[in-house]
Length: 256
Image 1 (cartoon, rainbow, N blue to C red):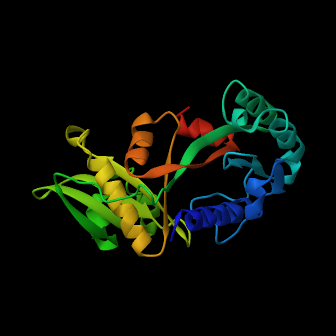
Image 2: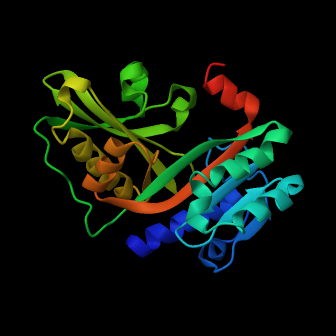
């Protein structure tokens, strides 16, 4: 597997998720398609989308419910593609959905490994590869970025850093779809800034590749520490994604 193959896998998966074609992400013009459920989509996605915008750095592909096609097309054709993912322009999309009880909810940057830079990083602590049975006692707040209790059946592989018998850092991956596994990582506060996160992330990415899957990583644009870890681990930005949700979902997440 090389960088081109990993990108091809990601484009094909995004096409499944959005109900479009892989080549749509490299067109000069923006593309709007109607969202549809697909059993091969990433497991955590709630389909069909109300509105989901994806850009691999050029145009935007928008996957929407038919009744919102005009609203979304007007928005993405009004601004330069990357401006559609940031304020102040983002307020236009949010205001457009507000009368329908919808709001912009999730926005994140996704990363793919750069095989020219991905390598096993040194770690001052023992690193152990963990399998699904090892995760059972680890569904606690300390490891909530590495593992997901609500989708525990998808957590398939991990890399743990141990100070003696104590687990001090954990990278876990979930089998979010057939071809791609997503990495998350946590390090105990007193053990941070020692390169543990990068050592675990890079090691786990290599283990995923050995199993014939493409690793990917996700973080909020504002999470500088996580973005630095992605870079230090040998990953590079690949695509950005924005999702609109019902306002009740947003309120619940904000505990309103």
